[in-house]
Amino acid sequence: MTARRTVADVMQQLSEDHRNFARLLAILERQLALFDRAERPDYELLTAITDYFTGFPDRCHHPKEDLILRRMREKDPVATETVGDLEAEHEKLGERVQRFKEAVQNVLKEIEMPRSAFDAVLRHFIEDQRQHMLMENERFFPLAQKILTDKDWAEIDRAVSKEQDPLFGSEAAEEFESLRQSILRWEAEDREASG
Image 1 (cartoon, rainbow, N blue to C red):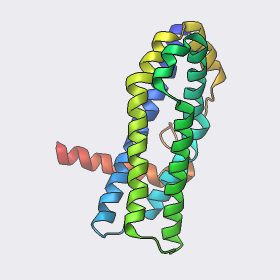
Image 2: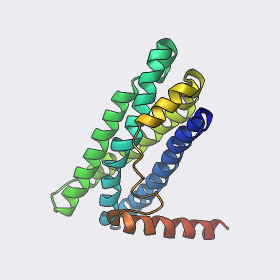
Image 3: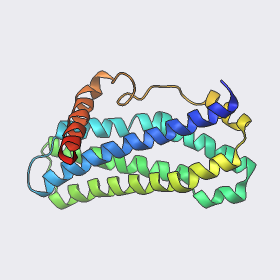
């Protein structure tokens, strides 16, 4: 594999991860709409989504971005300041998903929680995820491609986890198969409705 191909591979995977995260956020919005209409959302689905967000992004996606950021700081610290403290943002996102996960678990345990509180936790999670991905797509990724060399990308590619996405990879992990089927079904319904 050439170094130039490595740049494309790393960036393609990060961008694909963002598209997949956005698919999950769209499902969360569907569930939130049910909740807002006083209908019962699919808490099994919400649990699977929180399990996914507490796993794969923190094990694979964010460490890859953090490694890229550290390399960028070595090469051009002044320009890299424009993306802010990405590592702190990743920690904040991790805290948000934990709050979301706890809120879902509390509902399942029938621990009393105001509807507005559950709604707010979910809305904050969705909004924070979207804002974070937007910043990375518009500022972080283009700047990384500008600052880093082919050699940097090759070293980053060798250093990052090659773990397959347990939900969107070629085969879903057993705990995510139901979620995967729901995603495919809803996306097919959306295509039919808009087609």
